Image 1 (tube, rainbow, N blue to C red):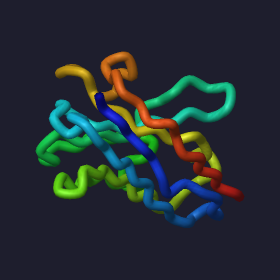
Image 2 (image 1 turned 90 degrees about the vertical axis):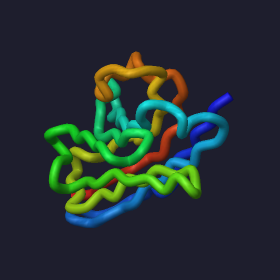
Image 3 (image 1 turned 45 degrees about the vertical axis):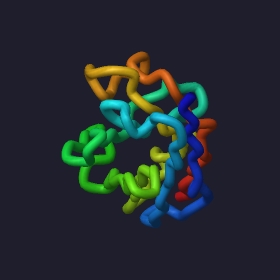
Length: 124
């Protein structure tokens, strides 16, 4: 059994920062990658960032590259998403997920465990 719990969301003004955390239990950290996704109202869930099991590889959506940083602390079984220079378009529910097997880290269907999500709202 794998459990993922996100935290750190909230309301922030444009240009501000937030740090999201994804606390994992079970065998989540033995998965190939842990990813962050987001879903805005009326839109499909989209890939944001991912990090490999060892933390040596990271991937980002073009829309967040240079502003967001993904990292992990395996000793604490936690993955972080540092979000800087936030924009109103970043407003969404953010989810972390554990990848089921090797494959494209941006493909939602390759992730089989998901957290409950945390709301991020960026005001203009």
